[in-house]
Each structure stands twice: as C-alpha cells, then as structure tokens.
Image (tube, rainbow, N blue to C red; front, top):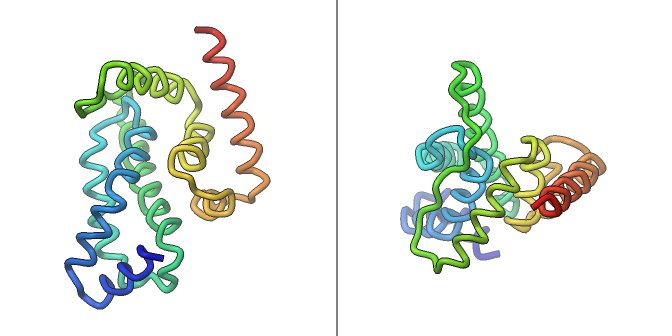
Length: 171
C-alpha cells in the first residue's frame, strides 16, 4: 500500500516520492539484476538503466497497485537486453560476480555459496527462483512478469529447487 501511494505521488511529479520509491526498491532490484547477470556484465549499470526506464515509464503505469510486478518486468527487460548484447558479442562469462558490502564472514560465505548454486542454474530456472524466493513475488506476479502461465512458473520453480538440491548434495 505504501508503494502504491508513492507511485501516485511520483506520477503527479513529486520528486521526493520517486526518491523514496527508489530507496525502498533499489536493493531488491539490484539483487535481482546481480543474480540474473552472474558473470555477464556490470550489474550496477543495468540497475541504473532500470531506474531510468522506471522514471520514463512511470507516468504510463495505469495500476499503481501493480508497481512491484511492473518494476520487475522493467528490470527483466533490461537484464535480457544486457544478456542479448553479451551473448551476441561472445563476451558472456560464467564466473560469479563479486559481492559488495561489509557483511560478516559467515554471511558472506553463505551468500557466495548461494550465488554459486544460482549461477549453476539455467537462466529460466534461476529467474523464477530469484523472483519467487528472494524477492517474495507471488506465483501470479512471476507469471505476469515472465509472460507465462502460472503452471509453467510452478514447473520451473520445482525444477529449479530440484537442481539446487542436487547441487547442494554434490558439495
């Protein structure tokens, strides 16, 4: 509900409301982008492109209550553009990106392990797992963002969980 009011205020030209939207959603968007672009390029640059696209597109958002799904749709589009560019020029790598921050050592190690497991997943499974589990989007929101049926989201989620379990068991 809070985001919905911020969206309406931002659509009316309130810069502080837009800044607050960015503050609230910047980390989830950055984490999504980082998880999706493991080894594929500068996640920070893509994150900036997401917020530029949000700024330009926000006035056209007709349903402010659907902001989260719309935001992740914008982020997904930017990620896919980045991946298309990297695969087109053959420069996409597979190594995990570095994690920034000053987390305690055990938390950092856990995050590295999770990032390694995620990076081992194919893109479609990784994407649905990140959206559903790391960003708490509903099955319906995932389906809307990915433009696929809910049943397909469920099957990808099931497959992704199985793959992560298998990867964890190997270690």
